[in-house]
Image 1 (spheres, rainbow, N blue to C red):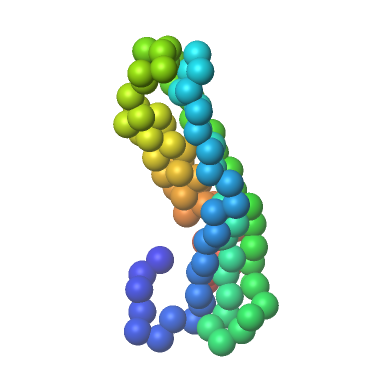
Image 2: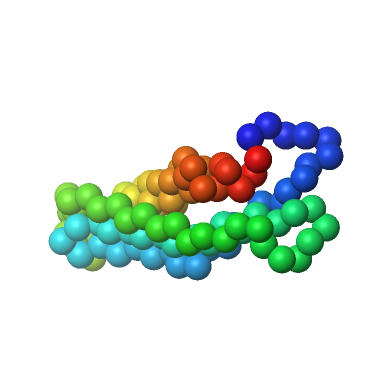
Length: 96
C-alpha cells in the first residue's frame, strides 16, 4: 500500500465505538468502519466493520486507580482493530 501522487482510491475510517472500564479487570473495546471509495465517487467500493477487545487483570482495584493503565489497554484495543483491518485480505483486494 504505497502512496502515489495520483491515488485511485480514498480510504476512510470512522470510529463507531470506543470504550474502556476498570472493575476487577481493565477492559477496552473498539469498532471501526473502513470504507474504500474510488477517487471522485461518493459510493463505497468496499465497506466493512472491524472490532477488537483487550483485557488485563486489574492490579489495583480501588477508586484511586491509575488512568494511564486503562488508557494503555484502550490504546491496545484501538491498535488491534486497525492492524486487523490493514491485514484483511478483502481490504487489500479492494485497493488493487
